[in-house]
Image (cartoon, rainbow, N blue to C red):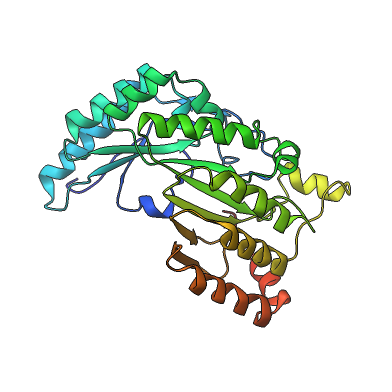
Length: 305
């Protein structure tokens, strides 16, 4: 039927808010790491990780091309590769995918995706340069925090020094990148310390965007079991906003800061340093005036992210 779109999407499709206008192309499904204690994003998949066949990827791009011929809408200038960490793929595979994207969607100038810090380590400096030339740019990395204690406890698989080293390699290759920060990951009484540890790393780098999500714990997560055993305690909701305030206060780099998405009860965003006072003022008002119970109820009623 005219207008029907038939694409290979597996499970829930996740993308950053700022990739809303990008073409979403599945090249992997699931996560190669799949060990972070707080994460339940890919629990709806019957497998840990799967790489999409090139045939499926090409079929999807042919479908996009077909839709372009049927409808007069703006052509996407950017493609976002779907999956928890497509950047884990070998450089050769990523280059093949880029070639297909440019063949069928010539309007797409850049290609982004999610990446783990450990995915970058798999690429040589020469391969990173090749990937940049092929259009890879604006990679989104869920660093979560620069707090080594939290990174170890949550089984992230890397430390803050690795964030610094690998993102400097991206910069040398000319590949821009964005960070996701996870407010609350350090646990009760440690949020401000975790935020400052994160800014210590960020201030040595040049992320374009720092997006902040708030930790939401679900019963099917390993972290929930750690809480039941008494091994970890969650921050209060107000403490999470104090943590966010410390993060913004201590960021000394030009960056777009955005605490949006469903995990944040009150969306906050601004360009730093220009909007720093405004963002801090909003955070102060939340800390002073918003009821803890109201924020707690919001989180308890938040359906699975």
